[in-house]
Length: 455
Image (cartoon, rainbow, N blue to C red):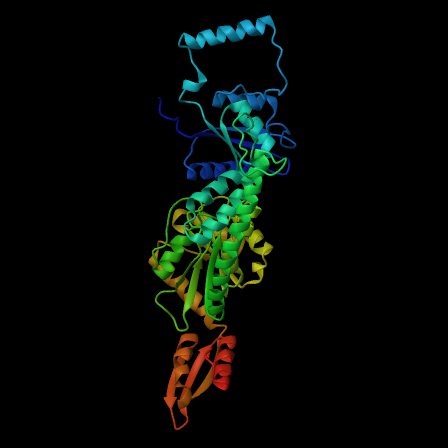
């Protein structure tokens, strides 16, 4: 038995009237990176300008045949009706079969053909089926590729649950009736087909997953409430902008760093190093991408909550990517959708070690001198960023004095945990501690002193 063919992919992109040439090329380049991340070798691209996607199979007849030539398919969508063949056609097909028997080229034996088609649009189940019939290849749309990448990269229990919900939601309408003599009967309700049974099972499974996720989310909410008044920085941005590299540089934590799309799907929270008083926490979040499926946006609640509840957001942008402005727009759009655009933020252009002086100047002209240009691989840049973070929080702090009676000395540790102690002295009453803290933290400490409760 011959070994299975490698996964060779052809990209399909339809340029619609509201998309210019540069944006279309950037979308296809990104689609190629998504396909590569999934393990496919991209061997060709079929592009077409159209007013809208072709209803039957995305592409027009001519381009569909071009796609079929790259995959070994006929390039036409076969009719569901019984085909009447003329004597001439029968003779032509018979001759073709004889040619194959005599050792001439057979598409099923060619190794230069693609066996996967990746479409840069969200397509309907019927369009996917028609493309498969016309090409003889597996068909993924952009959403399917992203969902599959998320499925492979999710590591934590929470991320796995979130991805499985999104994946099942995507798969359910694309199930097909198998029919035939082997159609399953067990467990089927009255009048329920095998397809309906499968879809019901998926609905039940999604309900179970949501219950599990709700339990985990409750625990996460408790952890977040415990960190509510702590200083928190969230790194947000387009996928592969370098957030994980920045996280590792700022915190010294061994987070995964890979030059792949969606290498990070699990929210990681670590303390800024060297540690400050009060401590500053840094969160690394899942990256965004253009046309990110809404089911995935909804599923990754924990990551979005980290951004929503952060004290400061850093919009991390890959300065070396020529489409970085469009990527920044995508990030802002997603965060605006959840209301996180109201969180104080700073703009950070990463990977400046990969750009020239002219590009640096263009970024400054476009985004102002407030934009931070740095490389997560440069220790001096990372140290300067750390100082900016500390200064940003310091500017929000106020000074105050706390008098802690000897009977409440247990609160001294809470003061050091939640404020920066400038001086400490003792008299007959107890400890007099001069601090600098955020107004909310200072008010909470004073309330704890008044009530005798732990803040």
